Length: 101
Length: 464
Image 1: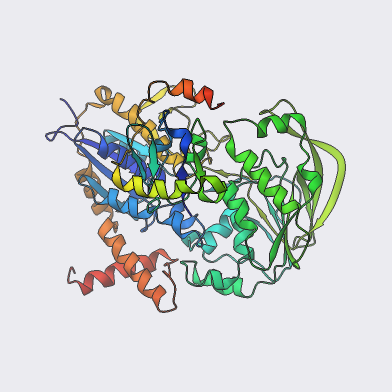
Image 2 (image 1 turned 120 degrees about the vertical axis):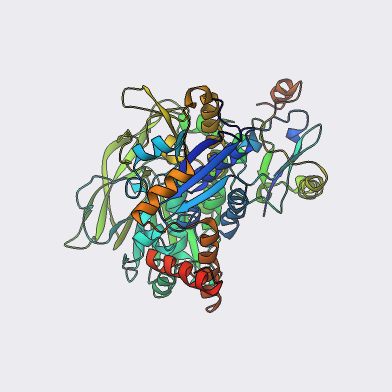
């Protein structure tokens, strides 16, 4: 089991999750963040931290969302670690509203 | 004189070595200043509630300690284990030695229900049971009568769930963990077959995380029983469940509906009771039953209160655990908010009872905000406290001796100090002791034994 960042993060990248991660397992690229499943300890603190509900437990992933497990695992190796909150991306608030949050 | 430079490093003491203490150390060491961080821990073993709180079957959560190990190895960090503020060094001394002191002592007191019969034998604080199965020295000699078949657990948070799960897990699932040996032996003889989890608020207000709640439904030979009627929500609770800021509520309800829809197939069961407040406990010397008063939720969404109704019911139970909140303990020489069980503070800056800031004193973690949140919540909290401390640097500019002064004061008392390397010796001895019986680790549950292990290891490596 792990936690995964799904599509809602893309274009928002609020990174509140990063500040509440006890083990520094978030990695980022220009569009979004990913969770390293090798490091995540399943504490769930990042779930309520995300303003757009992008983070879910693996258990709660819908059938058509399962690919996010692999995407997080691979991207977290490729992209650099992020340990502190950054300002959200331009347009993040518009996307958040479009997502209904 | 500018502090935070190589000539005059910022010298900080952190009291407590649980998650919030380590995250404060990390935030300090990440800053651009030259810093010495001395972490003072009452016990010879670090990690606070990660060692003595997180349940032994949650190995993945406990693995957060490898991150703490990395912090402890960073330049500038020093552990002073087996040193207690108030016993071995006073708050006044620390204040004179360091530029600032961060208190991260957590919340290890338990809140009482304050109802008649609570003093009966067989009524325990869940925190004591948790400390017992985790080998916390203060709890190692406690006894819990597991010959009783029916147990009541009062509370609606993850600690209450941990207690239920530890009572219900087959010991085969615990044998290879770091559970205390005395607890494994006692649980192997347990006759518990019915557990009642009781709380005054409704399913939408419960503080469990969905992950822990769901796990209750996976225990072999056990079933979770929920009355479907208990999941019929009022309008305010429905609004709370729909609040995007509280994603766990809807998930919890989903898990609970799953439990409620199953037909009974096992003889052992965990019954979840909502909107029931214990108002008395009955029994001669030992507890035999709880009186539960039905509650009704009233108020607007987010501000609902459980209001008593006329209806009462009797719940037979031979063993009772209360888990209605941890609270902090007053530290000698520091202000304390006895109602909230925290050190009064604004954003981590300690204040006196009137709200005036006490320069040089900071708080983080549960002693700062109360017993809420998950392990990672403490990282956020400690970052905030350290930000305030760094903002205050211009006010903390008096030269301080720091570490050398503490070492001198402790040496004068003849205090045995446990360093991080010493702790690693204790940890190695615990792992070796565990391996003999196929366990991950067999923790020392006695402070003298911890100190002996260090002594033996030092002799082996020729340090003495």
